[in-house]
Length: 434
Image (cartoon, rainbow, N blue to C red; front, side):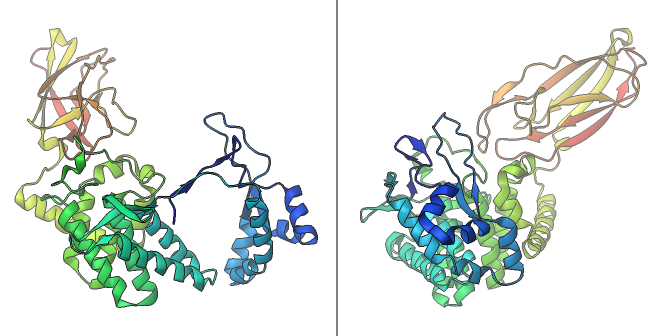
């Protein structure tokens, strides 16, 4: 499968793809009303770059009617009855002219297409789609898998293969091979899935168990590791690799591979926890009970092992806090000593999902705190630099009423590789200087 097709034709965004009800009636004649009863015309979204939009909408199944048919086991038969109408509309669409096409054949995109074909084949009884998915798997293995180097190439173009594959290419291809094994029980697919998993574990996992989009040893030709972007237009390589290794471990009854998957997940769990909506594929996949059970079990064992060997611990383990009254009780000086190699988020935090350093009185009354500016810092996993506090920090907390006896600090400690869970640290106020 080719990579993409332009959305624009003759300067109009979506012109090639949409129909009006009048156009459908003109093409289908007396069959149009039955077709329109089963389908809806979905409006295109507003253009973000001021493209002219066409009249009409994208032809979709009417959701309610299609779902009812699916529940009653008649969806496949109903869709099959519209094959002549689909063919007639396609012919009319092709007559408009074709948008430009990106003719690269990318490993990741082909694997995801194969997974989509395979997922759709059974519910709507399309055995030919399963055959197409198998053809994609065979093509990936025959054209893009380098048997000598034991890795995938990224793409093929006009018959020539090129490019170092990303983690996402290997993980998507591995998921497809494993899914094809599940649908056919042909051992060749399981063999291929195992070979791809071995490549991921060898090339894309570092010594700490963290995943990388490019092999760490090669550097990928980049001066800096690309930041994680979550599951955006497609599932991320990190998400797909975790799910693939979990599922392969389940099929092979291999707890070691499942442990690797959860260790890899732990390496970016803070990012997922901070913005779960950005990781939709991963969150949805791990919500499946069979996977959730494995992750819960392995995470508990990993946490126990980390505690035993002295892992990074909690935020409070890396920030020492003292509070003392000063200037006759008019202010409280809060002193934070942050361990070397760690930092806490500035206030205000650089991103909405980050926990800013914040002081709250548990009793008494305090005024607005003038938090100092932070120092720019960019972690290995971050998209951009954020403002942080490092070393020793002193905050002046004005007292506006009764002197508080206890303060609470909201903190989140991170190093250059991982963020610990947000923490609430309570501290008693030393009133000697009141």
